[in-house]
Length: 128
Image (cartoon, helix red, strand yellow):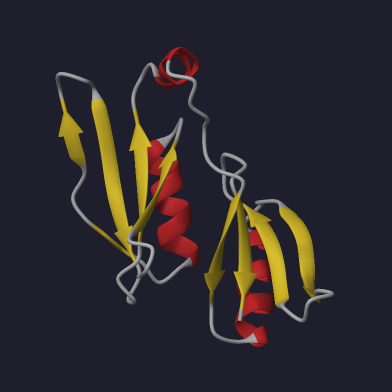
């Protein structure tokens, strides 16, 4: 088994797409749009096959409240391959004006990671 994709409701679809494409080695599909629901989305694919789905509706705040949903998720982790890459991406994210929630470090359970925030506050752990 494997995770096929993680979906994130977003307020600014294009800004979120730019963030993920800028900092991670992802490929995007063409924008999907459903005019009846005014729903639009992108699938961003990792080389491994796992994907992020970024989703938007103009009435997203109201839709989330009515359906007892949440915007975003607690966090997810992206393995970038090395300590040096964790450090580099963390630095690039910070220099681009985005928040670093946790500086690169080795955790008590032995993981080397940092924690960054995307433009809408979703937390991403960068790991080896």
